[in-house]
Image (cartoon, rainbow, N blue to C red; front, side, top):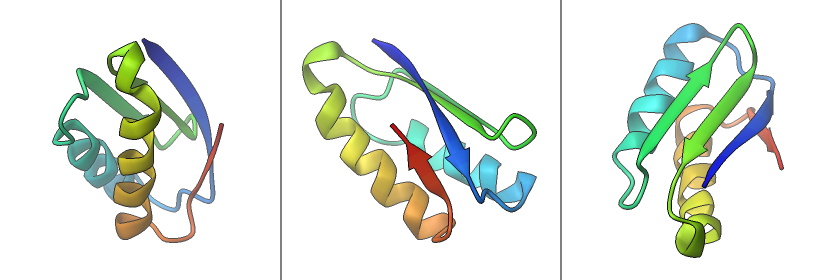
Length: 72
């Protein structure tokens, strides 16, 4: 499954790259991209584990950019 999410308060391109790198390291994530300019994140992961993986994605993003919000 591939889903896109809108991001709010993503402050810099460097943080976006760190978030993308961190998300790609999560077990089960097949692909991920975080665009600072578009304020958008796309995650590809198996359907049956997608919700659990997204919980880890949110934790990872909060660690890197505490003010950034992921709109589901």
